Length: 244
Image (cartoon, rainbow, N blue to C red):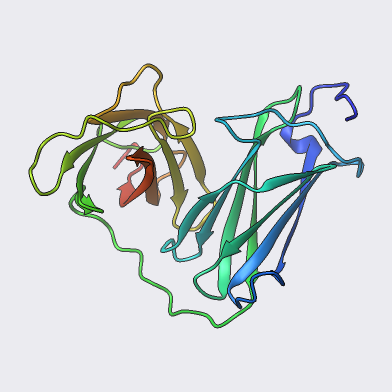
């Protein structure tokens, strides 16, 4: 591999995205996502650092925020990453890549793509008035400080067995942490990939520090692991401006 001779900043890196049919699967909704990461002058970037156990994290979210997938494309070399994804329907999707160039900064690149196929009726984005919800037999409560745009706050997820009410204390590390949180604004423009506070145990609580950049409606996805299964929880919240 060619050594990276200077520190690359995000605005010096560009990604070419391709989404097309996956001829190996034979399924209409299975598409191959390809990312080609280059310098602005067209030279390929071929060295990346492992970040949270992976070279690249790819988030796939439908425009109506109803579909979410966090996947890890295979590195093919020469700056190219590929993976097949089963989209639920045709339509618009936000693709978000998090990666770290060797010798450079962690960076995020996003794009809107139109996926071929029969479209589904958009699901309305419904505000969660109650942040106590049940996911896969687990009662998960999200608590956060009084939210406001630009304010540092803590997101705390608390887990209990939905049937017995007993706290869950056997969460496993997921990608090297107690969990990961992804946040996207309703318009798809404000994105946060939030990592857990260090030194946490195995539950029942998991805390994350973050700040919402602007007021508006956001969807929060938290991912955790228990008994070798990834649990995805989600909430829709409204973040007011400081003056509200």
